Every structure is written in C-alpha cells, then in structure tokens.
Image (cartoon, rainbow, N blue to C red; front, side, top):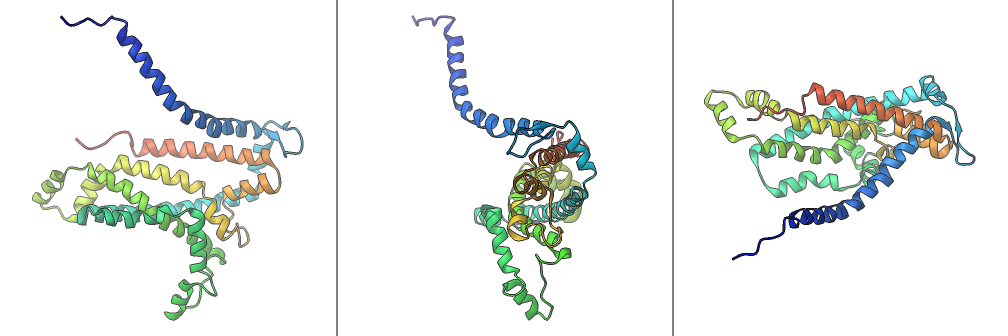
Length: 301
C-alpha cells in the first residue's frame, strides 16, 4: 500500500518554489529599484530644487516649472524634437509595415530576417559616425554620388533644413528592421484562411491589406507606435555625435538641452524639471495612443 504524504507537504513545497522564484527575480528587481525607481524619484525631487552639485539643494517649489513655461530655448527644442518624431515615426512605421508584409508574403527565410535586422545590431553612436562620414560634404561617398548624378553637394548635417530629416532617416535605417520583425511576428498570428476567404470573394491584394491585415494588426501596431514614439522623444546619442545641436540650435533636441543644462551648466534642478515634464507628456501620449487605437483588443477570432 502506497504511503500517504502528509497534508503539509504541498504548502511546504509551494513555499520552497516561491523562495526559489524570489531568489531568481531579486537581482533584476534590485537593478530596477536602484537604476530606475530611485533615479526617477530623485529626479522628481530635484525638479523642485535649485541644485548644482557644489552646494546643498535649495527648495524652490514650482520655480523651475515656471521658468520652463517662459523658456524660449525649451519650446524651440520641443519643436525640433516634434519635427524629428513626426519624420521618424511616419517613415519608419510605413517602411517597417511594407518590409514585414513583403517578408510574410514572399519569403520566410531566416537569412533575409537576419539581413533586415543587421543595422539594429549597430549602436546609435557607430551608426551616426558612419553616416556622418558617408554624407560628409567634401569627402563623403554619398555626396560624391550626388555630384556624379549632376546635382550640387548637400550639407546634410550642416544645413538647418536638412539636419533633422537626415538624423531621423539615419535612425530609421537603424531601427526599421527591428520594427519590421515586430510587425512580422504579428502577421504570423493571422490565419492564412482569412486571406483565402478574401481571395474567394475577389478581393485584391491592396483590399486585403487594407481590410484584413491592418485591422488584425492593430494591437501590434499600437505596441510598435508606443515604443517608437517614446524612443523618438528620447533621441540623444545620434544628435550628439553628428551635429551636437548645430547649426544654430537647429538640432537641439530636448535630451541634448537637458544634458547641456545638467552637465555643462550644472543646473540639475531645472534639467530635472524638463525631464519630469517630458515624462508626463510621454505618459499622456502613451495612454491616449493605447485608448484611441484600442490596443488591448484584437479583431482576431
């Protein structure tokens, strides 16, 4: 006759599993608290102070936020950032969707996916430096080709009207493969029978894309847009290594302005206030995107 395990064995085993799970989660949780939660709380506190690293922080209440509202450089930087976001999001989303659909309909090759993802494996700094060389006005191979085609050379990073679009397209080049693979994963969840039914009804490829693919991809597209919008507002490294805010502040994005205030002028309180304001703006944008695109609901099934 088999021995009967005591009733307390199951609860003890569950407690043991819980301890093991907590042990595995603890390092990540510690890193989350130390490198994200604490700096965020510290930054919120500093936004209400005047702090320069050389003396104790002095409480100023809403003084930094009142200064922000009347700071023309802040509003100019916000406008530059919005210009970058619109170009980056528009081009990247359309290009990524097109690449994902082509991969889904024409090939499932892992080699092709690897080629598409390859630029994402390059850091923003390296990508910025490489494209700075390629598009250099005097020696860049890009301008050599433009001149060979019979056009005048273009100061891609030195002209105020070209600088932000160029930086945006450099980041599109780097991130579009990753975005395309996210959308491609969403396409995998759409049953082929849906497209077969569309063909039986006589729908064209464009009609199926508009009436089947895009609606069924809504949750994935919502996720992609939220990620890209948040990332676009935080652009810094590509701008820093290519133009550093020049010419004439034409590329002085918000993150570069925050960096200049904090580490060049030691105005950590005001820099923290701008960072907190940006965090609140991104939170509102994310919530609005989530609700307007009904990201939590899918048309599948």
